[in-house]
Amino acid sequence: MQSDAELIESVLAGREQAFELLIKRYEQSVRATALHVVKDRHLVFDIAQESFLRAYRQLGHLQQPAAFGAWLLRITHRCALDALRRRPSEVPLELDESLGVAPESRDGQLEEDKRELLAAIMQLPAAERQVVMLRYFDGHTVKEVARIAGRSVGTVTKQLSRAHRRLRNMVKELYDAS
Image (cartoon, rainbow, N blue to C red; front, side):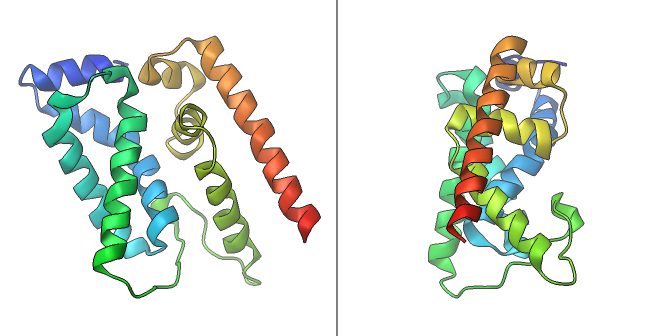
């Protein structure tokens, strides 16, 4: 599996099909980031498309190709905020399997738990958020995450460990406050 930096180099050299691999790699993470902001599963797909389009157009300006994932998620966040400004009315959140998020349980608890977990993930530092999303949203192995992120396996393992600890603490605080 090629790293993000290698794929970006290929795209900039004129092999646009390499960008398709980046789209497949980050599709779930981009959707999750957009969903966190807009809470409208229909709008998420438009935001994802706009995010990838903006990233493609600005790819030549990316100074650290190894940081593509974090850069793309910042673009996605801005696109989602732009979408909210264009569409000020609030739409209820509907989770479904097409976004990689399980449907609501009968009592609504699963939906609320997923929403709270996603909110906690979005509060992680960028590097930790990236590896968590690649590992659990996009289903990559730790070794693949390391290659994609341009980091060592040890670094990714440590970032995942730190993220797990932070998420555990956030969830614990949430339930202790309830």
